[in-house]
Image (cartoon, rainbow, N blue to C red; front, side):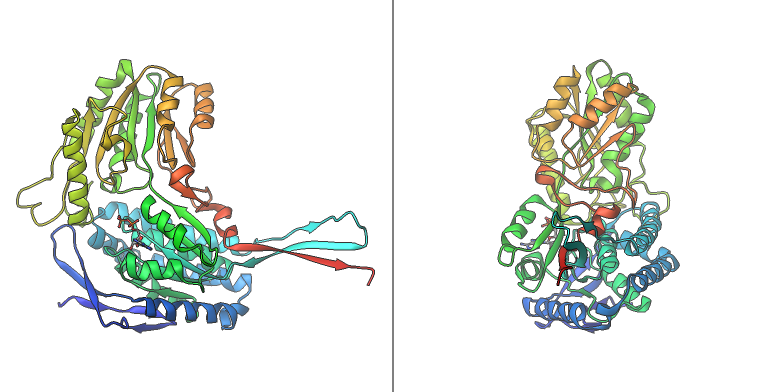
Length: 485
Ligand code: ADP
């Protein structure tokens, strides 16, 4: 079957890009062409923002009650559940993640939509108490307006649902710009949204390039809020671009998260989890635990055990249900990861497992890099300081609690952190001392619809998941009534 030509969704209509151009999206497991994707121009973004504005201010959407929005989100969740297998396969095909992983993701996203549906009914203002008894004052919450979302490729369906859910729960409207490498799941989600009854213009999808469609969205004066997930550098550009009309921003940027193992921990559980923390989705996870600090007396044996578990992972095409690790998303990403690997070796690190791109008949057409566990690494190495977004884990010995807190925090990032210990006191001390948006004790990278997630420092601002996520789509209005008049 010839690859499809995918269009933009603007105001409920599937339309070609105004420039008539497309770009290709490919399967990273074998390099085959999956589809041609419409390349949105600034003019297309303009049309999408105008549609989103009209839908927000005048369309039927502006009259949807919280109960209507809840029902809509519930319908969308049901449809996603109906098509779960299709969506899982799509994410696997386009970005390589193993089907076991993408199936789990879809199930979680169905639950997430139902969670947002619940929140839609429980947004409340306050009754305040001015000191003048003749005055009545209260606050009401109003949706922010037109939202733009710019998302990465490492979880295309995940990121789309995470941006769309709170928009629908709050009564805002959305223009979504998927990543160049992963547009298919967002486009199919848009189809599902139309089927669920999302009114025209409420959800628009402009596929295209970051510096073109993305930049146009970030600067657009008709956009009230931008939610961005991606790199720090692009996040900084979005902050600058959004200054014109002082957009509200939520930014989920990179990480270089510490995962700290004390000798008193359950070391078996910690080793298993350290592998998942660093290598799930082939390390293409913002909160991956890529700096594995291990108390010195157990460091060598622990690193060897982590490398042993990692070397047993089955690497291959994500569609194979036996696969533990799929390919990296693109040739560009493979080249980035390979460069980091070469730098780490040149700076004196040793690889206990992995260490170079996989080759051979099963791998040559795709972008496969094995899980790599480094020893003899140190904090100043480039591979230990910078986010790699690939399956490279540095193990680093430490001698004291005080020392490891300082080293774990000595980074521009602050997204997640893991602590493994059997001491309750230490668990409390570290969860307070670590500068991160989430601290996981005796677990890693747990996510739940009800628990906020986000970064501090250069890892971003704003929170996703939880009530707070939906609340960030509202602004507060104070209403005063002089009861003497
Ligand atoms: P990566 O380098 O891995 O692609 P980015 O942070 O650059 O990570 O990309 C994340 C998202 O940001 C993608 O959707 C991309 O198209 C978009 N993007 C890239 N550059 C810009 C920009 N200057 N303005 C707005 N969006 C951008």
